[in-house]
Image 1 (cartoon, helix red, strand yellow):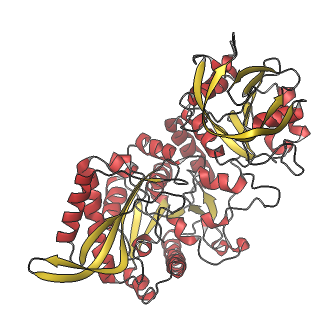
Image 2: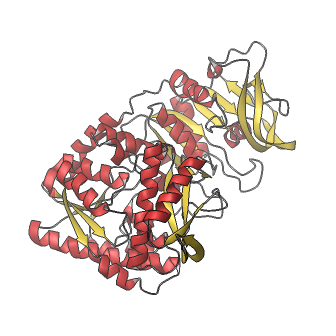
Image 3: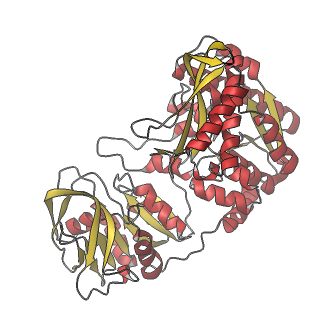
Length: 547
């Protein structure tokens, strides 16, 4: 969403509009995932949601008072980087264990989570003779009939990532699976409704992992598979009508899927009492403003105004080459323009009390995840990015959703596939894809090259398979030959990545014939570019964007 441009604007935490760190869904049954700091915790949540089961992620240090407010179908304890026996290692509080026991809530411990079960119930965890990292063949013990392995063969591949391992099964538990390196990689206590897995069923390297999670969440815990986007949209519309009453809501939109879905949802809820603002900063993609106006205002009926402030932005960016300065200039100017438009809307329609914001669930997870004993759980103030002096109450229709769920919601709302499957576009726009100074001429050059690249991806059928694709204009010139003359012009680079979460990414293996068509068209059709490169770096160590 466009608010990414604002995280580089310098304001203290107190100066931002606040958002809460929890979702406050007290009536909806849920699977609670307690995060011990694993890089895979968000994947557990995604896998549970893919079963159409509602879940939320909490810090492992969540209080019994907070967790006890919710109707729990099951609890999953995530992995984590610590050793359970070390001083300062995180543990679930005794009060929470008491609540879970009283309510007979099924519990699944994954990696560190299994070791936490052992720590609490009298098992023994110690370093293994060697670390186990990567694919491993898990074999069920002879005669194992555990429900958690229903439908799985006697041996199956799973992903391991651990140094410590279980040396003694906790009281009341029994071994149900092992590997060549570890005797106890799966344990269960059917009476207490507890299961432990040393491996990670949530990652893509564990092909039968989704089956194990379904066995636990649906077959053992009996969680309802009623988390559907059609229902979610209807619930939100009813809720926002009640909350807003006869009031007005303002919100900024870009051409991205998040802001498009949020705006359409809000428009369905309150119609023209939602006022959308789009700011053209001069660094948008080709025909972006016109396309967004057609899609949202003309086709979807959203009350949308586009403010053309391209000259204002580009004048402020003259001579600026440092990436952080570009972001701060664009973010600060955006806030100024949005506040000016807010004042105009207030003058014409009366006071606006609410601000629509496109927060997604990964933003919320970042605010509440366990960061380790020396870290603080931060408020995600840079998501809102607008001054608290505006005195607006936030409405965040997407804050319970992952990106794939936002797309699913868009389809449920009737949006066309092109809108729903658009690649992410950064708030500062082309300004951070032009390395060096941003000028109108360089923006125009990159805009044309980018449009050709996207067109070729659609024509060749690769667009949907790619997570993000764009062209970067480098601050480099190279010698070329066109016709009978030599040229000395700009170098551009195409970046295409495949990713599911944008936290990690690999370069997309684009076929040579598609690269060739892109190169030929860009060099021949875009005046000023005479060489095209292809970025084959992965994240990490590189980032997806270049600036």
